[in-house]
Amino acid sequence: MTSIQPTSRPPPLFAKLLRLDNPIRSLTLAFWTWKILLYIVVTACPGLGYDTSTSLISYAANPTTVASESESLSGSLKFARWDSIYFLNIAQKGYLFEQEWAFGWGYTKLLSLFVSGIRLSGGNDGPASTAMVGVVLSHVAHYLSVLALYRLSSNIFGHATAHQHLICFLSAALHIISPAGAFLSAPYGESIVSFLNITGFYLYSSSLIAERNGATRLRDVRVLTSAVLFAVATMVRSNGVLSGFLFAYDATVLGWKTLTRGPTLHTSVRLAVIVFGGCIVGSGMVIPQILAYRMYCMSEGDARPWCKWALPSIYGWVQEHYWNVGFLRYWTVSNIPLFLLAAPMLAIICRSSLWALQSPSSSSTSPGSMLTRLAVPQGLLAVMAFVGYHVQIINRISSGYPLWYWYLVTSAVDLSSSSLKQSRTLAVAVYSMVGYALIQGVLFGSFLPPA
Image (tube, rainbow, N blue to C red):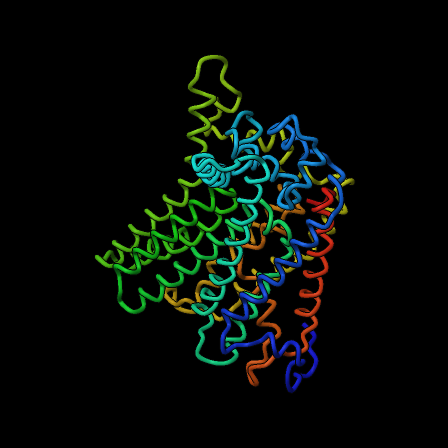
């Protein structure tokens, strides 16, 4: 990284934003300012957009209403684009078609609970209301995710000095302008996964602090609570299961310690809790598959092909059969622009994962060792997106992984003066994320790719 000499003080406008004496208030102000701007950008896009699918869900709910008029009733329908159309339709009607099981059961179930509440209270539970619920849910989850990242950063880097405060604050601020952009405001699962993932990481790092302080019961409660959050995140988006690596890492360390030094009550109890927590995380992947298996494989009639697999998975079948997701399937000439679009995020994720692995080693019970634990899930996410996913989605699903925020921020914080260096890396990242999010907002509101 190339850096210029540290500046004596930040620019005046930036100094006003960096109110480290009240970081939560500053983050709240920055968050809602950014969200209002994005909301205006998306809702200001004229017409139905390039694709008229949103008008179809409006028409299905009320065939007597003209589609263009129904869309103009609520700005929330401007956020009903791409996958969110499926989410909204499933939340209202349930899973009617096999291919719909590609869309996270956990998120659609959460939306359907709110829709049921609206219906029971006698309110309008049409597409516009469901979309508004999804938009509000995404905004709240993203805001809580920002606060969770601030707390997680405090656990990892400390909060006793000015430069530690600066790292925590800037990391959370970067999360606000994440390249996920409009997807963190729309009825999508990304903001929910981000909140659950980062909060789970916070609790897991807090369990290490409790372990260090000898509070074993508190440690176990935090470990198991984080496991539940990761399990729910997995139900919302399948990549949430990658967070289970934290449990696999500690189970391996504790297992090796038991083999080399002999078992102790303390080690055995902790290992049992870790293994049980890992099973909880795995259940987030298994439970939706069991529900689908009961629906398609235990009813009368011909069973679907995936029912006969050694490990039946409707998710794997649907992704492969209907959405053409699989190893190197996305590697086509027509998709080269999408790989170029994803390249900066892939590069940052991979570089930050290596940075974390090369960080000074610390005790496995130190919160700082979370850097090592988090490097593998984030790195695996990048590899899986590159070889198997629709690669452009890395720009939005990366929002729930904190390492790359820390990498960018620590490259720009001068430890000697507790101020910001004029870091090209951070500056380019910030300008790029803001510019990309605003352009993406226009494309999203107009129902244009990339998605």
